[in-house]
Length: 84
Image 1: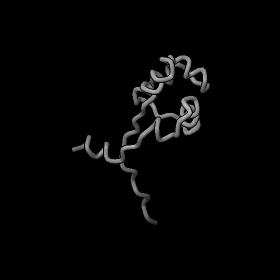
Image 2: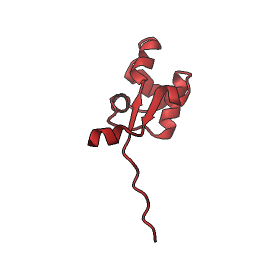
Image 3: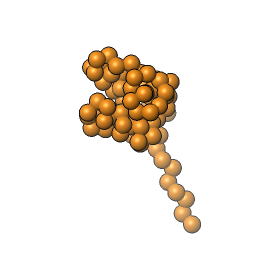
């Protein structure tokens, strides 16, 4: 039986704070209310301490009327750089 490959570490970054600013300086609390999570959850996602569920990520993009890739970016090499 073959072992499953270990996923490479990576980093998800986001532009939520910038998007909030460009949408009438929307508060974290307002964004949270609009997608059904707490302000604390938005703060944690925004700071990179927590990765949103796929549903929450799509909801955030929908609030700002942008594609998911305009909110969240994946850097597959970020974990490798941090380990060197």
